[in-house]
Image 1 (cartoon, rainbow, N blue to C red):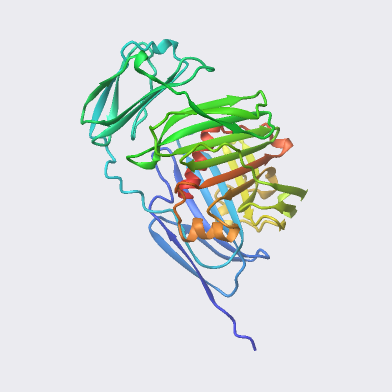
Image 2 (image 1 turned 45 degrees about the vertical axis):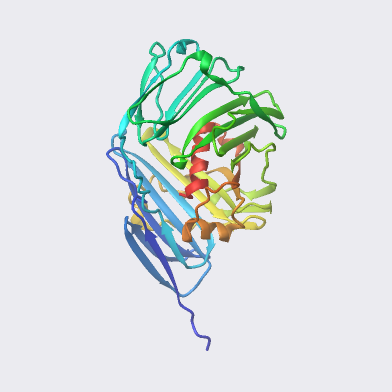
Length: 424
């Protein structure tokens, strides 16, 4: 008689994984199923706790369920997210982490910036920032601004653009002293004349966005350097940057073609001259969640498919996403949601109401396949913000849901960059 093997699946929940504020409260659960949808365990998660589950089999489906409740919204808005990870072996997952112990988590002073004769009312775009604080230039008839100071010394970055087609002008103030004042006139601003020409694939629209790193705080605080968006179908775009100012850049490229969009984020010493894309083809044979079937040909570290339900009248939203391997045939049937969770909002958590929304693909230069992705994000918590790393991302939205509100390019950038850096 064969000896039954036993396995242990452990989850350690860090501080801040389950979020809570005066405006929003979260609840989170982990639910373990076999590959044939037998429910093994369900457990609500709390910060700074560990949970261990004894198992007699491997190849599990792990469901991470999130409820976000917004009591201040009308009718008490609730948003559910179920993220499914397929074909997972028991191990030790670390969910969330301790917050960074920033030495300067509070401002220590303020820096006065005098823009002298710069007529902000005639400036198309403007950015003013210290190492840890953006300064919103709203009143264009004022030329003196106070910027919170978090470091001593600190850095100040100013960039202005007179019109959409003009070259940016900038001034970099390094090593600004405690509560010091700096000033600049328009004729003392440097013109951003250094550039590289970036080749893009054919597209209906594109975005090129560059940020410079912060030598004081690393890559957690970045400076806006250059933004170019166009719907002219350009395949060669000039990317401008300041010379001898930043040690490295985060570059963000995006091209759109109908319901398909490709993204590339790179952390680099030099601006990339070519836009890489994920080479993958997906044939969706059945888009219904209750019997989803897709044939995936090509390489990506993680393939994800999502379904949505939105009831704006009752402020209820439900997002369901299935994550797995690329270059495979994916067949998925959802298990029933545990009754204790479903009973919280049974009208929202109705799987039959979900409609297929989008396919996502991500490929990281420092990861090799889906199991390595799980290891990097859930087990080892690898840091991925080293120079030379890059992330490719592709999403293809279904024709029937193109009317769903989309994030703008800056929102997507910040979301992807955070995942690229911290894998949250």
